[in-house]
Image (cartoon, rainbow, N blue to C red; front, side, top):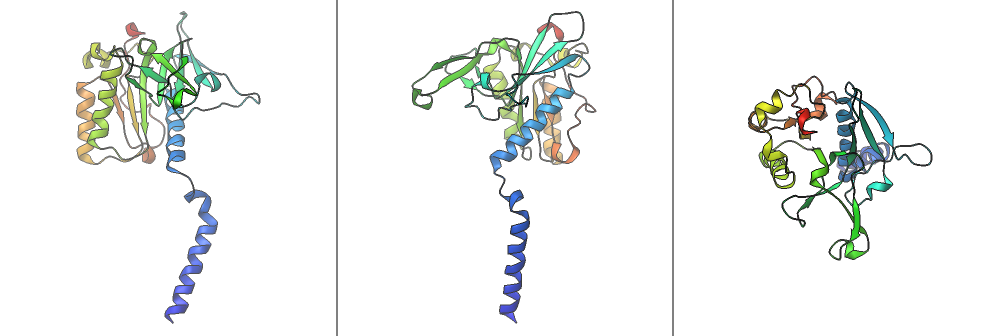
Length: 246
């Protein structure tokens, strides 16, 4: 009886594995990349009223090529040009995984998941012996070219994650120190979202309170629970950067 039961369970397991192996073979890296792409399009939604969106640098078959790793050359991947609809020449670029050099020191660099740059920002590409053994170019843009930087984390929020996002902004971006919560909250004319942390996992009450408190004290957005509530972020009270900074 026991052997027959074990055999039946093993058959069920094998049948389940055969039918759903494609789902369970997806790596954590692929899940993170897919979440980042979802955040990318959610961020694009925030520009639809103020900007014309123009995909650039498509591949030969007209497909958009996402960059979901910091090791890629930005010149080989697609991005979206953001062009103001009002009578102005202001143009920006929404890109993924662009390495940013801090204003504090040339050796301090981070790679935000999503970044809004001034158009035609220079990425460099010189070789560094301490990067990939000097075999590949180190593509990096100066922090002065950055309008806003955003992070995407497909996991539940926790205190250290929320605080570390602020640390990245403080260390890398010179404009972050000069922003004040009351200035950002009243920036109704701004087109760019304030630096935003997109988090997939649902938040417990204590973490939600902490995210709200950080948002009150710093010019940021904490966008939590995207896995459960979906990609529509425009119904949330989101901070925007004042247009004077752009």
